[in-house]
Amino acid sequence: MTIDKSFRIAQVDNRIYGSFIEHLGRAVYGGIYEPGHASADQSGFRNDVKELIQELQVPIIRYPGGNFVSGYNWEDGVGPVAERPKRLELAWRTLENNEVGTNEFITWAKEIGSEVMMAVNLGTRGIDAARNLLEYTNHPGGTYWSDLRRSHGYEQPHQVKTWCLGNEMDGPWQIGHKTAEEYGRLALETAKAMRLVDPEIELVACGSSSANMPTFPEWEAVTLDHTYEAVDYISLHQYYGNRANDTANYLALTLDLDHFIHTVKSTCDYIKAKKRSKKTMHLSFDEWNVWYHSNDADKQIEPWSVAPPQLEDVYNFEDALLVGSMLITFLRHADRVKMACLAQLVNVIAPIMTENGGRAWKQTIYYPYLHASRYGRGVSLQPIVDSPVYDSKDFTDVPYLDSAVVYNEAEEEITIFAVNRHLEQSLELTCDVRSFEGFKLVEFIVMEHEDLKAVNTADEEKVKPHHRGQAKLDSGMLTASLAKASWNVIRLK
Ligand code: AHR
Image (cartoon, rainbow, N blue to C red; front, side, top):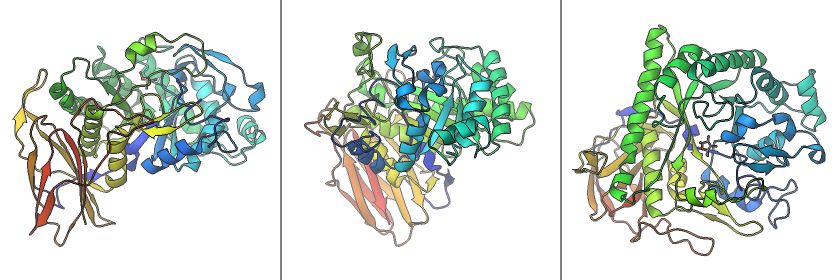
């Protein structure tokens, strides 16, 4: 590997370390919020969970969905809690009691140092509900909706900057699913009205629910044909799983992710050319993760219960490697991917798990996310890499070494993130860092485990980082031994 100060991809937008809380399963109720819990604050939010989130330094959190938002009446979640209606929640077929809503969530997010990426309902609702919600959250006062907020005890506007125009509107499962034409028109008109309410906001149009959708990438082309000048980002969503228990192929899935990002970029640039536009569309990868472990369990859940344990994937060590590789992929696309949300944050396909009334703990995937969020801030540099490769079931020429490099100019610090995809052998990394004169090795963080299927529980944290890796820096040449199947973070200063 060779890295050089001048091989700049782009400044990393810290919002690529965002996450997501949906009204789904135990994400809100029993996750971030549990009034009876020993660690609950005065508003009922769990302090033990807050601490684990704060460690991650999550810059932005998407809310309130997800599929949930496409049937949500935001008015149900504001005002006196005792007067809020209980509703059938159709996306996940549960009961929503609306104890937590817009004001509580935004207040909680501010407290933990996160911005909110708010989604509006373009499934069962449309322009009117969206512009009213925006007036409620962002307008200072003197109008019906802003004064209603003030009467609810929130004198100051929340100033929510980032808004998603619906969620996965291409998906037939979505309440109010639309064709690209229908969605493109509605998204444009909603964007226009919302910008009239508050010209400072940023808007995200729905891209495809995954690269596997039959309408991908035509969906993006049609949607952007309508909305190109009215929105700032197009969304991407992707979940992976190792259903065939083929780890070599599973760890190669970031080649698919890379291809997905390239295709969306190209589609955006095609519309840019078609419209003779000067504007470059950015990407918001606002749902990504591993999601498959809980699929069968979810089929057993009784409908219409309150906060059942839905989508509670228990992540193993190989999942942490893939999550690390996905973060590496976003860093290498720092020029276009400006936001990304690990879906989700607590209990629901999440790095943080809780027991109702009990403990909170870190899943395996918590760690690569933590390391990237902490040390992946700065300029993403393009490493020049010469790695041996392998073929897997679906991919050819998969580099064993997957890597990204971030140069934090303010702190004069470089971090190399690297996954060794080789399942049997270590990789001996040699890295030319001569352009960083005087830098010293400060830390080498390693995650490895003999058992690719090892998991963490409330009782035992089997998978966690250590500092026993072998690395040295001599006359501008860094050498490190990257253990077989490992996540590595090498920090120089
Ligand atoms: O994150 C879980 C679900 O995945 C979201 O509600 C939906 O947008 C996606 O299909």
